[in-house]
Amino acid sequence: MTYGTFYTKYSERLNMLSNIFKMREPKWETYVNPDGSRGGMVSKSAVIEKGAFIPVSSVVLPRVHVKKNMEITNGDLVTQEGAVRFTP
Image 1 (tube, rainbow, N blue to C red):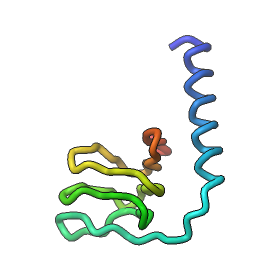
Image 2: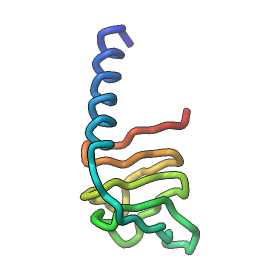
Image 3: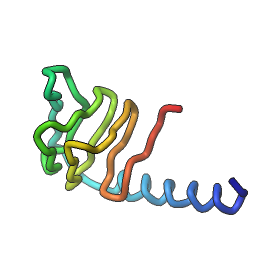
Image 4: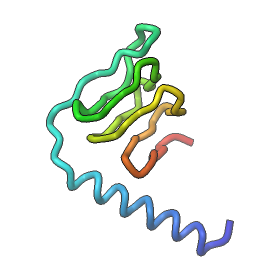
């Protein structure tokens, strides 16, 4: 990866995070995964398809549509623009 590509991706992620923290969304719930395990925090305005799995340390932001076949991993912050991963 070249420096320019790295900087562009870094800039995009900073802009995404900046937009995220401007939102006001006080209504959250803890998601229950299909296997009954505790899932991550999900905005009440997000749409989660039946059968989707959301790891306990993940967060789904407002107005996101999570499909049952989406791959969400621990530490993901799921936004309308994509996911920001905070784990290696």
